[in-house]
Length: 339
Image (tube, rainbow, N blue to C red; front, top):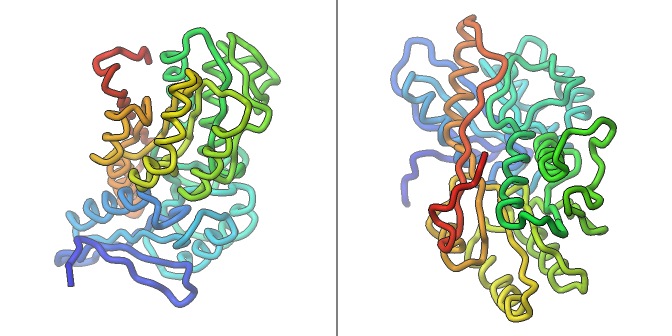
């Protein structure tokens, strides 16, 4: 049996899972946890690893908890309810449905030290947490929009692929994309689709929501590409499309090749954790034009450090933000994208 540097512990409900590195001797080790939207998502696996390694270095433990198969706020709520009964020294939550969680599991938080990571609580619920670690998701969306402008400076028809419409971080990313392409932050247009501003418009059937696993994301994208409505740019606000790079290649490669022959092939831009070799190969082969990545392990490390300081009674900043990185396809390597 192969021994991994971390392990997962199934709980009786089938919803609660844990991941922890073995701890070194410590007089009074502290126990923390990240509560993910979906425990098997590559981003959360990497964030959990970063948290666990940082905790081990100080003799503490950091678990990764969450629904096992997909992202859903009701399942995450059940996981939170169980986590709050574990007597942990701190919890970091990646928020699915902010209002729902605030009205249910978070009502029972009591004195448990709570922060958010990756996806923050909404403005009306933000008082429930002590701090946030992750991206400025509105700014991240604007960077995705800048990449679209880089490839299509004259504008074009856009389709956004996203997760659940209740996910705070993805809604902020979508708003950032629209603000960037619209050209200015206008009053009264939050949530409004692009309608030709600066040459940009969104297809009537987009955004394509509930693409929160690779199978569903690929079905939605192949259906879009096979339709009679041409699309110039596709932006995925998460990495679902490329979790298994070979599956993406098999399903989309032939379709994209046929579109290339007809000169109607779209630009594909994907938000992702740090891409591995297989994902970077998709760039090399022109099957993806750009990735905008986040430092997922660093988000985990910084989440542990914020929880540890809070447990020690020390002050913490209201937000800790991590860097992003742009990866471009080979023909454009070295090309600057203004940020």
